[in-house]
Length: 193
Image (cartoon, rainbow, N blue to C red; front, side):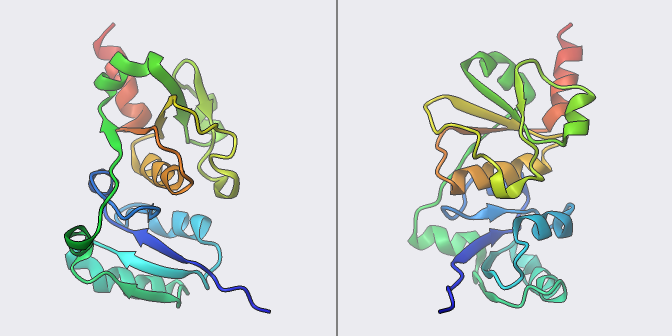
């Protein structure tokens, strides 16, 4: 008996825009970035059924690109984008704070650094947990779904948007993306020394 693959909503809008409102349980992989690399890691099964949400002006481009990459089970593109969804259904949003705002709140939760082990080893925020985003199969499994806030960052913001979308899809409720990632956090520290 063949097991049917569940439909996954893939939202390719930029992370900062995605975080303002998205379809529940959708995964964000911004098309304007290292899209191909992260798409292959998040969706290694090219038979995955995908419903696509894009920016309105890039629907055909993204759809055709997915086909070119071998993702032939795109069941459709949400006509009218996220606005169509919003007119009929609820959306979810996640906090997206600046490095300065994080500095004011950081004692209230856990810091999750999704950069590679090598990047983390070259410098990181005190008390940060390194959970590389590249381990998608297990990503988030070492975290507890408690009431503590998770502050997630990467190097510049692209990977952390992917990470928070995965955590949200896995049922985590208290998630916050740090805009600009580790680069912005380092600048914040320099400015306040």
